[in-house]
Image (cartoon, rainbow, N blue to C red; front, top):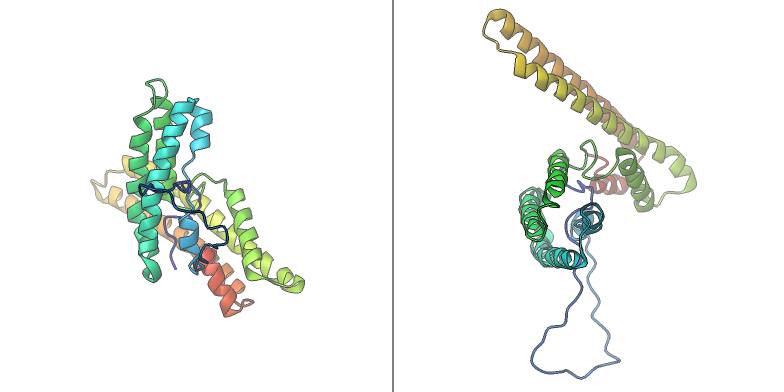
Length: 266
């Protein structure tokens, strides 16, 4: 299972659940004190369940942009409105839920929300907001396994995943001693590979801007750097694969599935 745009993760950024609002049908209905609301069918897709709880960082906007109360209420209303549409699209997929569709949905909802926020900001607030937008869009492209996991510190992300894994797996004390360190090794391997890749990519980008490849020597230099870049990436992925293989050796098939759902295993 490949990493997707989500959880990334995650986390964590789009729309707060809107406050339930009564619908006016033109008359009041008698209150039924003894009537119990129908039980909701639990969602057995953990990723879909998490996606429906995405939040837009209104509190962070309020703090950094010094929003007025009126601006705050309008932005909160925008998030509620778009959140309804977002969750409806997720729910309509039902059992045919396809996580890859998030990559199409998320930018669309994010850009619409950003335009709505811009509409209520003052000229003094807009430059700061554009800086925040650029930072958020960069993290969205990197995904939940990008440098900051879309707004999350890498260490905080690893800690959260470890806590979720421990909760989901339901291990005994002895099993925890065998399994949790191996989960940590997988997370560490991914984090190290991510950091190394970003550093190499930055270096390779600088090189590619200067390299012309107009003669044989230049072409050979480019090919050499390409080979080095790809070999290093393959070596990092091999380390992750080794860490995952060691972890799978001590997992039941059920717990392996749970870690895949959490995005810890591929």
